[in-house]
Length: 278
Image 1 (spheres, helix red, strand yellow):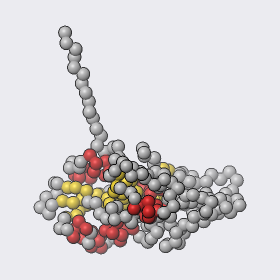
Image 2 (cartoon, rainbow, N blue to C red; image 1 turned 180 degrees about the horizontal axis):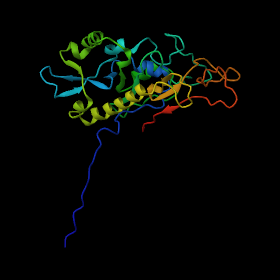
Image 3 (cartoon, rainbow, N blue to C red; image 1 turned 135 degrees about the vertical axis):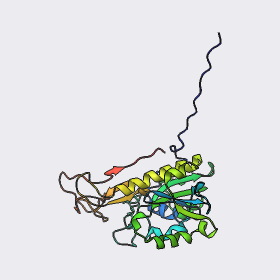
Image 4 (cartoon, rainbow, N blue to C red; image 1 turned 90 degrees about the vertical axis):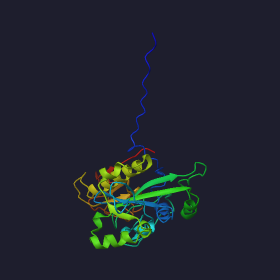
């Protein structure tokens, strides 16, 4: 009697297992994020109240693909520079201390809508990625062999529809004759390949999380949340200046509004966060 054949299951969840390298050891560095966001190879996934920006033919909405824009295309949405490591005043960069080898506020962004750094699609496994102690961010980006991906939702910018359309019509895909529009995610998902589906799912999840969580409620302080580490972490923020008993502590964020820690007060850092697999 012959043995029964073994069934082999090859199930793949195409909306999980991101193909991007999150560069977790570099996400706290605002020099690195400010350099990689300006890279000509950087691509963006945009959302409008959760609806993704897609490309399609003018005579059909059934065949859609993700619209991938350049940083130059999305500059009107990003707000004032610097984009990461923003200080208390608009246009000011957080000053790094020579005693600390990372950004003291972990690349905070709080002057405009959250920007999510999704990660890097590596084109080659031979080129070494920069270590956490790199000195020249621009040189490190120049040596990267891959495509960085960012994402954001433009809904909170409160742009008039005409102004929003004007920006999109000036983008690279629109100038090349392609049609851009906002679509329902369920319609888009039916035509995505494995790579695009995984990147879309990661972007949609993190953008939605940042949109829904804007105020600290863990300790009922109700302070606004600022995004750090490329919008994969949120902090309850009040002070963007050095604080601590001796004035030299590099822990920046306390609430409700204390410039120095007080007895039995819990520092409000990373009150809610998402950790994704490396």
